Image (cartoon, rainbow over all chains, first blue to last red; front, side):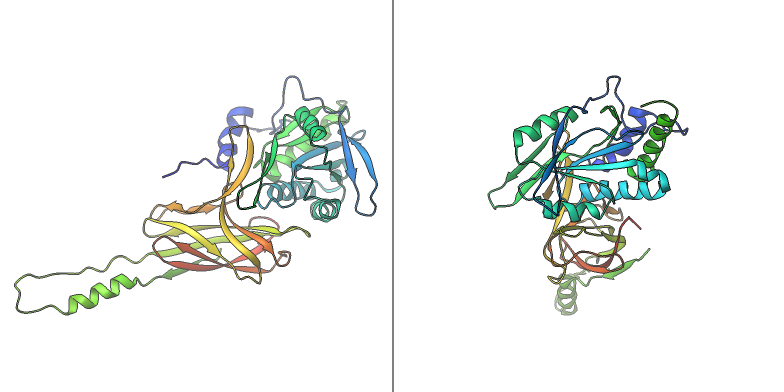
Length: 207
Length: 161
């Protein structure tokens, strides 16, 4: 019998061990680093449905807000829809505070994920988002390296495209620091918790 | 929670039983043919996540239990829903990335629920004919190594029920 460990199991088991149980309203459930990842000087093209134009998108939140960055692809049937659905559910619970949460989705499968696919896909999950796409794979990799993200797109012998990618979502502040890394499976509760804690920190004088 | 249980008649059991009826008084040996147990499948919590516009893939999640040791070897939906249906598994690779692959057989222990859930096993719908919208149902037929099948209606929703 083949032994497998599923992601949901890994997350459920490891979260309390790695990060402690978030038993109060000020604890983050995502992972934090003593030296946070710095992504505020990195940028990639943002694409739009209504025109062929692109703008350069920099990975940092607007003042007093948070930016949540996902890496994924639109043909992903399990990981991406689950994470983005959790994100949507978390924002719905936050009421008006959700206006302070921005979303950037970086496609790791840019050759299939055109702007025409990305925009309707993301509009299902958020009213406010940035569709990030580049076919310059060295540029994409350089940005992924800043987030410690990995991805691959390969085609097998039968012609099926196989995509792998890191499933973590990254919460970035207005200084371009990753202030919480949300593992796959953290769920709406975990996301809502961290967004709320971090927004409260901003109001209390943190960036 | 919707439950569906289907008892499957085993063809081999019937044939063995028929043979047992032809016992002869000319022999002193007594042969007792016992019919093999028949697997009973229980499925609950079946749901499919809504698929965004432009998405061509979908996933169905559920819990399935068999009364016998068995294995899930396939799944199918109407081609009105999706061109292809496969059982997939999402796993974490050594480099921390996540990927999916088709699974030919998922072992099932008797009376132990097999969970098809986000981040693990799932029924993958490929080349969706139309987006999966809230409130719709997808009729999914599961096939088992024992030869049995069971069909369940998965409710389309944004979140797990």
